[in-house]
Every structure is written in structure tokens, then in C-alpha cells.
Image (cartoon, rainbow, N blue to C red; front, side, top):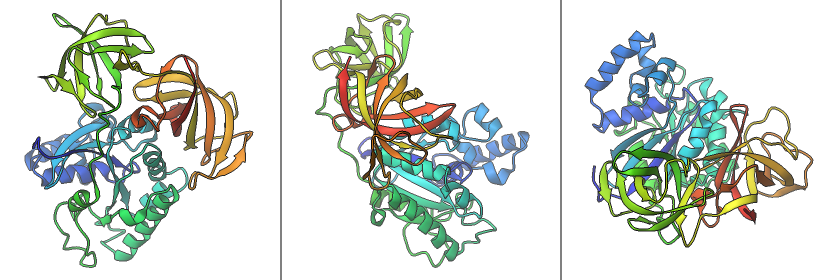
Length: 435
């Protein structure tokens, strides 16, 4: 992998079974990152689990966990790397099943760009794009969570119900574009490419099955569409803790990803809301010692003066002289993705922000918005329902370290979950009361 090329995190989104893993798996095989022999080995294993090979051969590449294999779906975020002429990409394969949307929230917030996969197969597309469909949900999420550059792949063009038909492609393309437009994307900047993960059409090589298509391949459209966002180096350090380890002979080692600022050896830092201070002794990434870590780097770091039990997942590390904000109350702008009934004041689901999870009350419903335009529809609504946008005053039930989205975008995004599903996603507009 070339260290010289600029790096982008690419999140892959779309409805379950729309061929996300197959398309990405095939792409990695064609780019030479996985050998055909490895794929064949997976084929044998797939047969053991009684799956139809046609469905899983390439998907196998991404579904690494045994549990996923047995269930035939992508659960955890699989991190894969590939290179193009212009960029070095890490693919974050986001799970399509609704109960994994939370993973997608933590996944998408790390994404610089998105690949939206929509199936052209009869029935698939209708289920994904329709009300409550995951394609719709993922598009809302990508927009809310600030993934602003997207390429669309219309997959399964080889399916017997499609047969590489241009008319079906146009129908699905128009539906996908309507959806993207509805949440505020500029579709003139979003290429839509007919592909097949199974036969490899238009992934890395121009197709011969669709002479009517004159555009670029999927991989070329990445390079043409995506740009590298500037790293927020000038902001104070914010590093949400994912895990804390004790390593014999080393000491306490928190692990996490730098979201803003720079983490340097000998820095004096504080973890909030734990309010514990310490000094950075060493920093390591992928088993290599480094002197400093920048936004996007996943690191483990040894810290002097802090015990294993002093800090926990969800705490945020920042400079001792510019500590992370701890909130008692904030105003958030959200989109209600899914709710069986209606949400009223006093509703207390679970809030997920970066690596933190905390019960959180809808203290006051301030405004109802049209999610497509952001226009105010109603002041102080009595309730909110699925599909509404809203501005809400939130009160976490215990201290939480987050920031305003305008100042620290990665620290200002959140999801609301209840009953095993994602209810809403949003951004922090304003912090009204600090703890």
C-alpha cells in the first residue's frame, strides 16, 4: 500500500441482500487484494453451511466472522483496503440489517465518502427504496451524518429479472436520484453506474453486456468524484475511547481514533467526563511506535497517572488546557427514521454518540421540520412521528462528553436507539448547559 497517496474512508451502504458484500468482494478480487484461490476455499465452506454459491462466493471475502457466515450476513464493520490511481481507500462495509444500523452510525461517522448500492432486481429495489426501506434509511443517515460525496452502484444488472436492460436501469436510477434529492444531495455531482458484483460488469473493467452505457467504471468514478477532506488539525485534540487495556510491563493503554487535533508523546491530557488527567508516554498504531497521531489514526497509547478502572469506553481524551465539553443539556436536530407510534416529550431512549452510550430524555420538542428542506413546519409540536425532522432539547441522564457539530463535526453527531432499532439520527446544534 502506498503511503504517499491520499487516504479516504469509503462506507458502503444499502439494503440487506442488495449485493453490497458481493460487489465489494468482487472488486477486491479484481484489484488483486484477494486471490481467486481464497474465494474458491470460501466456496467449499459456503456449501458446508448449505448456502447457494452464486449468492455468497464474493460476499465471503468480507464476511470474515464465523457467526456472520452461519447467518449469511455482514455484522461487524469489515475494514478492507485497496488502491486506485489516485487514492488509497479503506472500505467500511456497513451492515444492511436494521439491528446493525448502530454500527453504521459509528461506521459512517468515520466515512469520507459513500458508495450506495441499490439492486435492480425486481422486488429488491422496491423493498429498499419504499417507506421503511433500508436504502432510504441509509441515505437519510449518510446525509445527516455528513457524508457529502457519494457514488451510486445499481447492482444485479445480470439478474434474470433485469437482463442488463437499460429501461430497468433508468427506472431504478431515477428512484435512487429522487431519494438522494429529497434529503438534499446535489444529484448532478453523483454518478450512477450499472454494475454486477457477480459477473464483475463495470466494477474495474468496462462492460460488454451494456453497450448502451457510455459512462465510467465504478472504480474510475470514485477517483473522479471524491476529494480528500482537510484534516481538522488546528482544533484541540478529541479522542473518544473505544477500549482500555492493562498491558503487563506497560500499564494503562486506552485505544481509540483521533477525531480532531493531534495526540503527541509527553502531552498532558484529561479524560472527560471521568475528569482524570495523565501524561502520554508512548503511542502505537498497528504495532508501530509513533511520536504523534493525527485525525483518522487508530491508536493505542500508554498513559502515566491513570489506572485501568479510572476511564472507560465513551470517555473523551483532550488537552488538559482545552478539555472536552461535558453536557447536561443540548439542542439537537434530528430525523426520525423509524418509530412504530409517536414520540412525545419525556420519551427516554438511548443516545449513541461516538463511542458513548447513555439514556437520554427528549426534554422538550421545540420544532417540527420538513426533513427534505429543513423548513419549520410547526413550533412546539405535541409529538413526532416517523419521517419527521425536528429540533429537540435533550437531557442525558448522566454526564456525556460531546461537542457542537459546527465546531467538532465528528463529536457532534448522534443516533437515538430503542427496542433494538435506530429511532433517529442527528447533530448537536447547540450546547445549552454544561455539566
